[in-house]
Length: 349
Image (cartoon, rainbow, N blue to C red; front, side):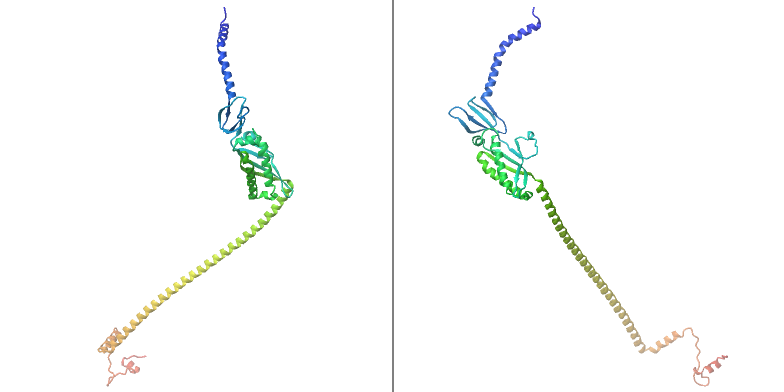
């Protein structure tokens, strides 16, 4: 009697006889499907080439991302990048594996008119605008890089930058103009081949040691001259500032003195006004007193003046004992004869 394991093995063998034909058919269909189709991924262009038949050759139709049918053995699909491409001319080791569509080559070595060598790091940005032109005029795959973009780019860059003097690389506007000229020349040359150059960027430049030492020494001298000129201008500006400050201070003093003079003038005018009014008031008082005196005199000279004199004399003699003596006759007394007066009043020594 068969064991459970043996019975399970026999069942699987019997079932496998029915599973193998469908599985083999699926494998054949998958292989055939892969042979009949090709996939254009995002960021790619597809160009079809017919190898056999009446339509033999490269077809101008551009295939966009997606799955496309091909006749096995008779048609081929060539893929080209559709996004931005980067050509980096530099001696630094860039992590090209982390940057898509990046190709690195050594930095440009530019020979200047003075005989010095300038090493220039340049970045060229471009994209494939017409994959059919690239396929028919250059070739499939990445051939456009090695056959066109790199050699023509180096040639045009050496042409434009080679016209500069070594010191011109310090001048940003001159350097950028040379890069723009190189971009225009590359665009004019590569556009008919289906490649559009969008930017040419100068990232860094390095002189050889001889010229670097010479130009640094000259730049130090130039900077010293500029420094002296700047200090002279600063001294002139300081002197002008001091002059303006002094003029302002003098103007302030003048205005202050003028203000003080105006104040004294006003005080003098006020004092004069006060004294004038006081003198006028005193004059009026004295005039009034004189007029009163005059009126009194007038009154005294008029009728009844004797009575008024008598009254005045009475007022003067008030509190005094009065003795009435005759001035004539036998008992008359002469007021001017003091001896007589003393004897009369029995006044002795």
